[in-house]
Length: 328
Image (cartoon, rainbow, N blue to C red; front, side):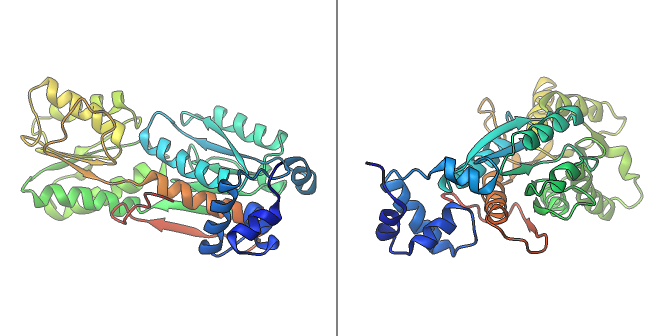
């Protein structure tokens, strides 16, 4: 016989109302929420999905819309969202946009047509349009990137601080000309990380035009490889490079190895751990970029909104140097 909400409440030592609030994503103290989730898991409790869907007039499905699941940062982020959602009785549908607005718009339309309970979204750019979702009162939380002009919850990294910290680390190692490979224009993370680099570069080389040492790429391996090759062709190439995401760092490293410029002969700093094990990361400075923590936090905010929280929009900003939550 299936476990009941009353049995979960008894095992957790809380009231049935508290169990209901946790399962519906309402705000509950972390201690009680953890007890309820543990009890529900131990009893293999399954909520009555049909009744809950009818009551809410929405499904028990959350859409997670991200640029690239092949990037380990987003893989970790997705795991954080899924862990929280499943504990609250929700399923997660994963959608990859490849930073393409037409794909993103299609997935947003599907979220509406399928009456999904909520959306966690890493926007393709500042031009992402979520007005239709908000008009239908579908909760939306943006993660990693924000949308401009929309009053929704956001969970972001301090990208400017990340660019600043990675660049400073290279100068602290004794390098003199630190270039930057960042992401595409119109993507706020790319611009903010370049801003942090530019601040430190200008402080060390005030007479050098910073833009000469800035390259933009597509946040993927091939983009990092091409951007590094372009920097190395300069009449006066950099002696170190800050790369603004992990996949581009792999590409940049591939090019350096192809020309026998193995770090630390040239400095390399990456935001986010290098995802492939073909390179022993000796000589590479890696700044943690905790995707799972962002996913956990974004899911918590979304579940709170699904549960009826109508408070003002919240923005949570964290730094890569903050300790990650390994267990959730």
